[in-house]
Length: 472
Image (tube, rainbow, N blue to C red):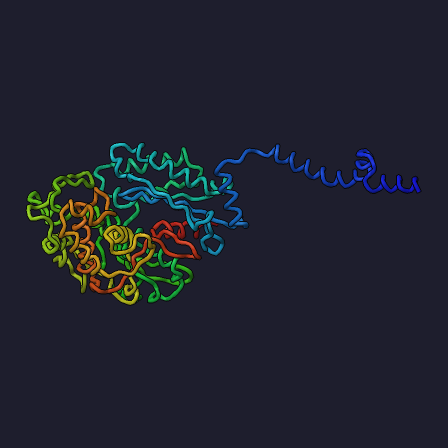
C-alpha cells in the first residue's frame, strides 16, 4: 500500500520539477518555437515611418492595390493653394484614402501673391506636396500623375510674372516631387476648362453622368478672380451657339462621359470673381467713396497688382445705391450683345433649357452665405434662393463697421468692410447677370455626399477623372 501511494504521489503532483520538464517537453517546444520566430522577425523588421503607416492604411482599404489609380491635383487659386489626392478603381469609382474619399489640404496665400519671387511661389507648395506623397503608396508614386492648375489669380498678373512662376513650379516638381509630372502638367487653367471640370465633378458625385442631359445639374462657381457657369444643353441649342472670334473660347464643349455625349455650355467671366469684382465696383465709384463700403471704414483695396480707394461715403453703405453701382460694374444690357439673350458683358447665355433648371452654386457663394448667417456653417449642402442674399445684403448695408463686428461675428476682419458689397454683388450676379428668378431654389454646395463620405465640390476632381481615364 505504501509503495502504491508513493507512485500515485509522483504521478499527481509529487514528481520533481525535472521530471515535469521531461514529461511536457514536447508541449513546451510546440509553444516556444513559434514565439521565438515571431520575436526574431519583429527584431529584424525595418522601422516604419508615418508615410509607411498611411500606405498600410491605404492597403487595408484598397486590397487590390494593383488596380488602383491615384491622381494628385494642385488648385493654385487667387486666394490660396490646395492639393487634392484621389484614388480610383478600375471602374473609375472613388476608393477611400484612409477614412476619407480624398486628401484635401489648403494653405494661404496663393501663387499670385509671389509675383516678384517665382521660387518662393513654387516653394510655398512644398508642405502640400509632402502631404500628398504621404498618402500615395511608395511603389505607385512614380506612375501617379500630378497636375498644377493655376486659375484666375495668375491669369491677371502683368508682364511675364505668370510664366516665370509656372516655370519655377515645373522646376520644383522636377527636383522635389516623386510623382509623374509631364511638361504640360503645370498650366494656367483656361477659365472654360475650369468651369467644365467643376460641372463634371458635381455631376459625377451626384451620380448624374451617363444619364440624359436634362437629368444633369447646372453649376455656377464663384472664385476669387473669375466666375464660371456651366450646364448641359440640347444638341439643337448647341448648333445655335454664336461663332466666336479667333482667340476666344467657344461657348460649347462636347464631352463623352460614361457612355453619353454631352453638349456643355460653359463660359468663364474673368474679372468677375468675388475679389476681382470688388475692384470693378470700386472703379465705378472712383475717388469719392463707395456706397458699398461699410460706414466707418477708410482705406485702400489691393488686387491684381493695383490699389483702389476703398472708403465709405459720409452716409455709410446703401443697399439700393450699391446695387446701381454693381449693375454698372457687371455691364448689364451691354450694347455688344448681338444674340437673342445674353448674360452680361455681351455674353451669350446658352439658351437655357432643362440642364439649367437645377442649379448648384459653389465656392464664395457658399462661404459668404455661411459667414452672413444665410445658412448653417456646419452644413455641406443647403437649399437657398437668390433673395436670401438680398435679405442678408439689406442687413449688412444697414450697419456700420463697428456694428457689423457683433452682427456678423463669423466674417473675417479683412472682409468685413466689403460685406455689403459682396452680398449685393452676389445677388445682382445671380438675378441680373445669370437671369435666375429671385425666389428660384438653388443648391449651395461645399461638399457632395458620395458613398457615405463628403467630397469637395471643386474642379480638381473633374481634372482627376480626366487624367485617371487616360492611364493605361
